Image (tube, rainbow, N blue to C red; front, top):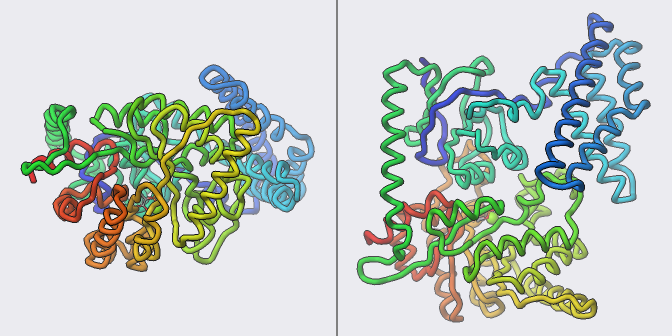
Length: 537
Ligand code: PEP
Ligand code: MG
């Protein structure tokens, strides 16, 4: 038995078999082949596997979703069977003596670059499809095709060198028990996704491919993983799992009770969610509403930016799931670690300080207006609050409001009904906290994003595990900015919420309540423990 320690995102625990998720960069290997005929036959077999896999995905998507979503797999089959693409790979293997992996990668990469350089945005967007097809072929060559996890019957612990938020979203299957990675930090979006899924994750682990298929136990509280645990340890953890479940069942008795302190101070408890299916889970945990719906996760893995109708349908369905309750939908917060194929964001030297969130939306206003119009239309179906991320200046709010007025006019001209949403901003930069008084005068609510506020106040990259010990959500500078924000909100008679991870830390709850924070928005699994903490104050 091996015991390895890492950095945990929560105190959750799990027992299961490890499955290794292999990244493309790890499977390309040597460029020169020793036996071209063997490489050719490996390529042809991977080609057939990929074609079959795409057909399977087409049929499955057609049945479970729609024709439009299934079409993408048909288009990928067409790309893959394009005779020039196919021939270029075979030539690279037979004439240039390259391995199948290298040939697929180099031919795919050249084609990708050609599409990326095209001016027509439709053709440029096809670059992401080329990459998808190329990745599938590479996974098939590795013998571990990308959708291999779909076929594993038993739930598993996923092991990877690193996981991006878009990969994590794709993996949010009911079979995922937890994950362990070498890279990544507990404040990254990947970690936040795991929290919302309610599963444990350990990062900064020296992973070993040989653990694939081995039994393991993740103990989030002790921040460690046991590989090949003996029977006694497995029994001990099975008992721990049962008692954790019992403890949770006991917490469920608080579900209908208000989050009120012993001296009668009430705080609203909302849920942070990323997908419409998270809403039901949040409601089961007694959420009073949704305090943060990260809209960018809806569209992280799609190749084309969804049009107004598609967005309207989804926002309306979210509101219809929450009749009479507040739903805060945050506008697209893309950039840094959240990269969507349709935006084709260029690499940046300082991505966290770069082209992200509202900066993208205010630079690409047509894209932003599609989301705004869809949200305005959805606002007619419930209590919609729209929230804008990464605000630093007053002019940004004024420009957003002007764009909203333009969108309303456009909808009126077309005779399309819309509602009147409540507008708020995230306070997640020191600039916004310092200007909270000025900004609060312009909006209906403030919501403090402590994850980014800590990153920018403390000058610490939230994705960098190496500096994790410096990242302190209780840092006095951060606490002071939160207090200033709460005071500014109340001077303007508007509510203030905390929607960053610090909101779920029960050791900070009293501090926040003393400051007058009106609401806390946390991952669904954190709702009931937090309510218990509030009721004990
Ligand atoms: C935050 O920054 O605290 C926040 C809630 O937003 P995100 O974690 O999505 O950046
Ligand atoms: Mg943020």
